[in-house]
Image (cartoon, rainbow, N blue to C red; front, side, top):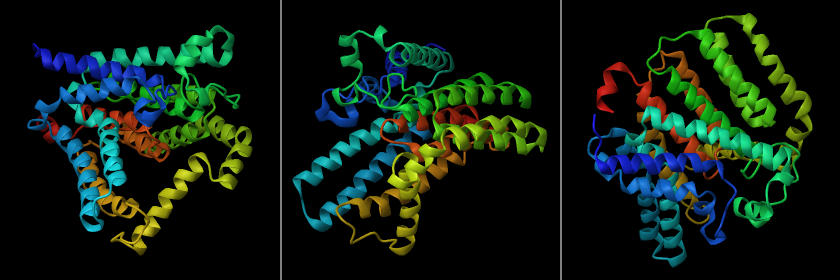
Length: 365
């Protein structure tokens, strides 16, 4: 089928944006914050402009825009209640743009084309491999001028001995690589008859890469996903595959885990905040009375996300072990989502919806 020039342009911009996410530590100019964290962000935002035509015909795109709109709506309610405030209005606008960026894989789901996305993911993973080689293993190979372009000034020196590639830290590299690898696996598996050993071998590859990178959070996410595959068919002997990951997390990362818990950093912070928000919502479902707009965002925003995202997830065919495993991994990895990491999360979700939806719904996406 011949594509319209507008669609072709959107696909190209979207794929460039996906590739350039591997440069996640740029943050220049610093005034733009997350928007400048990667040069790929601009390409994704521009690709959104080319996706307006799909709002009427593409349910996933429509629901993505609904999430963005709900954020603006929640903020508008607070503006009307408390009165206009310039700083609040500016913050609302900035967050709206960032939300559109982070949700761009859903908004631009019509730009997800198998061949183009596969090539983009492979190129991105190759760049990550080169980044580890030149930035972590042999840092002297990376010229100072290029290093200043790739890393913001405050990120140029890295205290951790683990790999980080061209990202801000180890966990960011591990989550990006593991998500991209899994999405690539899901694309390759799409349309093929499910074979448990083939898919399990693919997931073992993901686990091996994560272990080499050294991220405990990503290792935990892959371990949970592997467990769901292994125990699904009650092949208990395959549980031996989990032992290397368990040993890695418990032995090599034990001190790091304790440090996280004691200092409320990394995954420990995000998990704690997630649990705290659940308890806070049960205690005060209306949300009024909290500092600033966070109460409103939690009350109206989380409800909107719960309703809209549940509509998206309900379309995934969970009878397919590949779709079920993918959804488990993306949801577990969602605990670590910070800023641009949300792009990889929603890209995975969009791929599941597009290629692993329930049969009766495939023609409606």
